[in-house]
Amino acid sequence: MLSGSLDDLFLSNGQTVALSGGDGALELDIPLADPVELARFYNASGADELVFYDITASAEGRALFTDILTEVASTIFIPLTVGGGINSVDDFDRVLKCGADKVSVNSGAIADPSIIAAAAKRYGDQCVGLSMDAKRVDGQFRVFAKGGREDTGLDAIEWIKSGVANGAGEIVLNSIDTDGVKAGFDLEMLKAVCGVVDVPVIASGGAGCAEHFKTLFHSLPKVDAGLAASIFHFGEVSIPDLKRELAADGITMRL
Image (cartoon, rainbow, N blue to C red; front, side, top):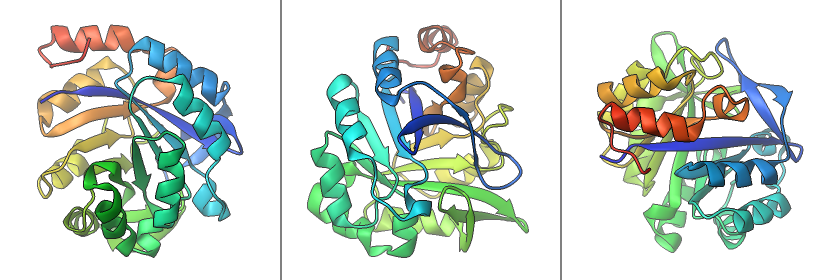
């Protein structure tokens, strides 16, 4: 199993922002640097992949910022996954033509689950990622839409099983309960997801230090990668140091 270190860029109104959470919907927090400059920095720092989310596109009912995406894609030389405002196969086409390697769909698939199978048939399941924001509600892992703002009532485990059956080739699981808290990944939720799918699972939400990545990969070897944002954005953890530390702890890394 190859464990990757992925960096996350959250975009709102064309500007990179940090998120806070843990008690409910994800909240926009501190404005950061230009997304293109950040992408260039993470490419040079050794991130294995960049995940680019236009987090308010679905909630605002608009298309993703393709001009910024095109510039980011032309700047980096690592795989690029893009999400936000993906509501149709035409949106997949538009984003892939901007230079993305994979497209991550979330709220759009909740509104129209057939988009997963249609996109997988046209582009292959390797290009189709299912991203999910989930939170504990009444003892159940519940799917939330529109950037964690709207409780869909869907059971998260059943939703993921359905998505993979329909052609999703990768799962990005973001726990709203742990996102922005920096107290560690949501191992319980991730274990439940890994137990029902056989596609790559990316863990998101909760990374605060290198130990959290160690715990993730040692506890859940089926998790393919850990995704983080603010700890890299604010220089709390450097990607090269993290990868060296993980490799020294026996975790296979691209160095």
